[in-house]
Image (cartoon, rainbow, N blue to C red; front, side):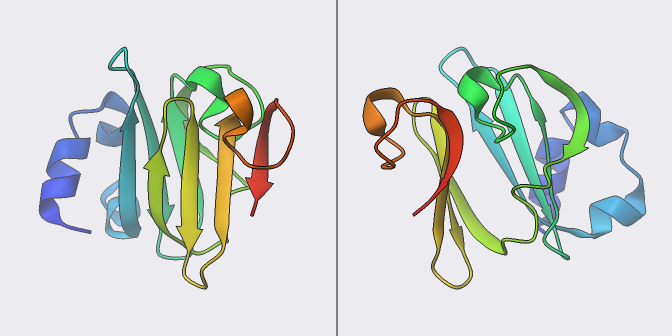
Length: 125
């Protein structure tokens, strides 16, 4: 992970609490800011664990609920998928894996997750 990413991310209080050995194990960080400038953070480690925290508006942290997550928390449902990229829409996140699989989660407003339902969930396409 680039030094620039670590410096930017350390502006977030939760990042400042992390130990150096954890920081050195980070593959990449994805920061999602919603329209109210509230942050949600995804940290993917070298062993493909996914840790998250943030305001979780519309369930974008992938837990299936909209409760705020104040402390860095592992998301077991997202871990070990071997993500390479994250992108977000208004109320959802789309992620790509190293082998080309696409996952999406969050609020399925107007069917944006592509699974034929309108609810908060994780969807593998």
